[in-house]
Length: 278
Image (cartoon, rainbow, N blue to C red; front, side, top):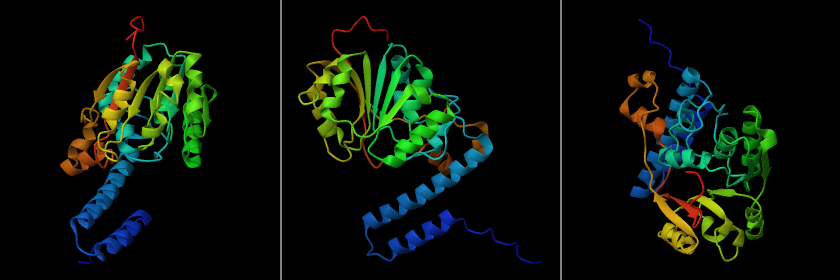
């Protein structure tokens, strides 16, 4: 019997082979093996994401932003976790609190493709959302995501935030969301950015790049804010029934968020604001 024809490799798979061969040609080391593992894991995660898109479409399936039309792919990190509604599961209770606190403006620093900027605009139609990112490609994707979900008029998209730009926090009840890959060490300085004293702040802290950074930032804001440390967690609850047929590895790939180490969040709320709704 003739052999079945092998399926052609996709451009992505060909590129992965090229990069894999380059890695394997290097000197043998544990770091090199880790690089190979991460490369192969990203490839498999993309395969799982493509399957998810074919079977379940581009609408976020669960979680606080359920119903969002999510244009694959994200500017960074896992697309499948966002589509499933499992992305950053540890934040979900905080997000629900945020939606009840009546913020007039939300400043999303490091908005990337707009998952949070657009998500909060959808959940909080009375709030003005200020989305900021230094990457022009990320800003374009944020604008596209806002348009796809009908919230373009609600979102102001622009470039980097400086210390003085936070002065707008004194003019309206404000939430600041910050995810800027370690640059929070310089930006979130309540001495140089005095407007931050008037805002509640949700920041992802990249201890993976600077050990102890979360403790440093918590200490900075302790005089003016109540500080809650939120560690990473995963939830498999959003996995659709058809994923029961997948291997355990592929199910993990669907939830994997591509993090290289500790990235806890700090939820910092202004002291003396007990009247705010939780």
